[in-house]
Length: 294
Image 1: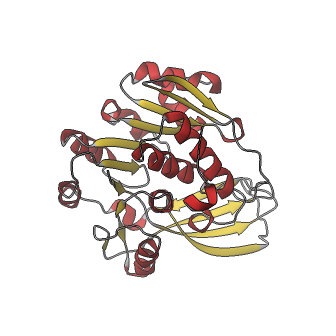
Image 2: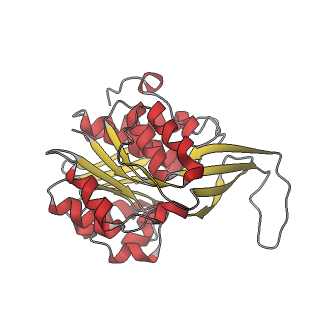
């Protein structure tokens, strides 16, 4: 089983601040660092570091060739990642003293997917393969529909959440990963304790995994309902926590682990991630996370 990840590739500029800037406010940053990022690229690296086979489908500008090289150095396949004329996507990220963040995205080449390249990438998938997609690229609905039509397992992380998601063919998704903001938007449920159940009712054939930050994670799927508590750690930067969770959960799933084991593996990997600065550099390896007997 392998993963074909249609995802963003970004250059992240991370500013350390004592608090996130409010409207009309100018604040000083203590540091500024450059990292590789993008939810798609982060999830590909998380999958690879967790031991899964993953091919990244993405687009960068000439200024982003080094990001393709970096993905390859991290064990991610890049034969389906191409260079186009224009700017690579980038993110401006404020990280406050509590490790929380606020992010401004420029999509750049992440919005240069086209139907021909999507079909060509999907034609490279084999029986039993999984397709993963997030919402930082264009043509997400077309990717979901085309992958499902080919009989591939569709995994979707609708982040960042926007109004376009409501019109996507979500009934075609096999594994849905959401945080509380995305889950509330999709379910219409304002109570965090009720989001997972509301999503399970709306999408009865879909496995739902809801990440809840310090409140852990909820699962709704074929074996019923599960909850995993968060691991208590000192928080430095939460930027890649959700991406790490998705990657390690799916890697565990591909390895045949039970849902409870996948949750445990993912929560411990995400906990390690938030103790480190940056996005992609903060993602741990399988050896660092250790085995799961959950």
